[in-house]
Length: 62
Image (cartoon, rainbow, N blue to C red; front, side):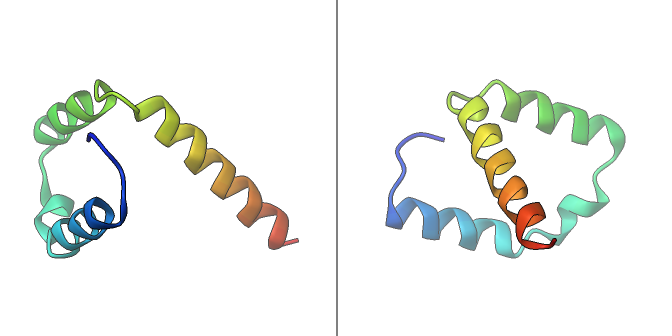
């Protein structure tokens, strides 16, 4: 992914919304997809942000 912003976020959410076939990927297809995503610029930042979100969710659940 490249730039972030309201338009890009909306486009991403819309594009992922109808992809139920993602759940039926074979192991090989899933491995290829994950390998491509983890090489994307900004992936480490995404993981950091997700970790922060899960930490807050865990804290609020207590």
